[in-house]
Amino acid sequence: MASTSLRWTCLILLCISLLHCARAANCTASDSDALLDFKSGFSCQDINNPGLVCQFDTWVPGTDCCNGWRGVTCDATGQVTDISVFGFWNGDLTFQIHQSTPANTFMTQLPRLKALESIDIQFARFGDARLPKVWGQIAKLKRINIVGVAGFTGEIPREFGNLSNLEVFHWDTLVPTTLGPGLSGSNGIPKELCKLHKLREFFVFLLPNWSGTLPNCIDGWTSIQSITINNGDPDNFGEVLKTGGLTGSLPSNLGKLKTLTSLSLVGNKFTGSIPKSFGNLSNLRTLRLNNNRLSGIIPWKELSQLKFLVTLDLKFNKFYGPLPPFIPNCFKNLEYLDASNNSIWGELPRRILDLPMIGTLKFRHARLWGWIPSATYTNTSRADFNFDFSYNFLSGPLPKLPGSTGIFKAPHNKLSGSIPATYGSLYTLDLSFNRLSGTVPAAVLAVNSLSLDGNNFTNYP
Image 1 (spheres, one colour):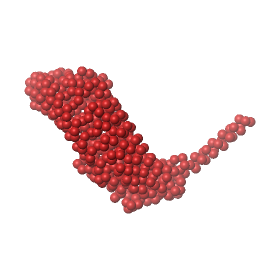
Image 2 (spheres, one colour):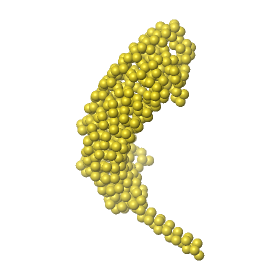
Image 3 (cartoon, one colour):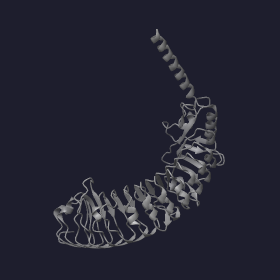
Image 4 (cartoon, one colour):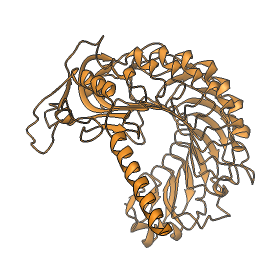
């Protein structure tokens, strides 16, 4: 009897739970109204692809916005937490989703969604829209993601400094020549944003009309893990843009961001030196300052103390001075170092090829002289090495390379002697325009990408 009573009790509780869940899944009336008003600011255009239904066609009055409305996510109480506007375009750049109301009212309804945590807008065409200042009133907002939106421009509103829960700000203009300049203006990052203590990621990319400075109070980003402000990226997405980019010096307070793991400021117009305080970034793994106007002596000592640093890219600046000794135990985890196209001078340190984890080492277009030191240590965990000492004043014989080297480039130097047969294991070798001589080993002649012009070999060319 007791067992039967227990079963009935469990069944009743289960039914109550299911009824509660069913009710909770229904969108609240206030959120539904706000979404329909938000929808009224957009129009859908046919892009001749029946399989790509415009998401706003699923936002039908009288239906549950938490069930079936594309791009809408709700919590257990039926309140909207995530808005995603995702459109498509065809080959002639006809966009599926367009702005259809004036900029001063466009997308201003979102603060009515009291539980909203995420705004994601990708691949749409706006006319003259700017980031709405009223978004600074969305108390629970954690994430703003803007990617490939044509005609979306303007400054980052200082009102966004009120978004105390914001964790991610991500703006990718994608193709400025086609989609427009993206963020614009000369104020850079407003100082009010320094209050965003929960911010983990700040990302802006390709902004030809955006300039300004980094605020000195940036150490207020006490939870920040990644800062990316790239006005182009020649290593990944083509050349650096000629216009736009942040200016001024790098704030020394950046060195107080103990949680920072990645700092990428590629293609801006920063001037001055690298603050020695960067040596305090104890969790930093990536530092990319290439293609700026930075100058002075690189603080090698401080940077070498960053035990987690994996990538250090300083090329195309105005740095000067000699290289440090690179003693054992420095740069313990450094895998990538590029300081090309600077006025770095002197001899290469004796142990430079013995950095414990190094895989890529580039000093192109510098003022280095003396011999290239031979490797005495081989990191067996690496599949191949990439060394580039092009356009220097290096002399002497060719060095002994780690056995798994894949690329070795040292054209336009004063290297002499013959080429070791062991260089035949490379797949790229460029030693053009040196003072090398003798017979090129057969194994070297078989290298996949080989350039030896401008030397005195007996069997090449």
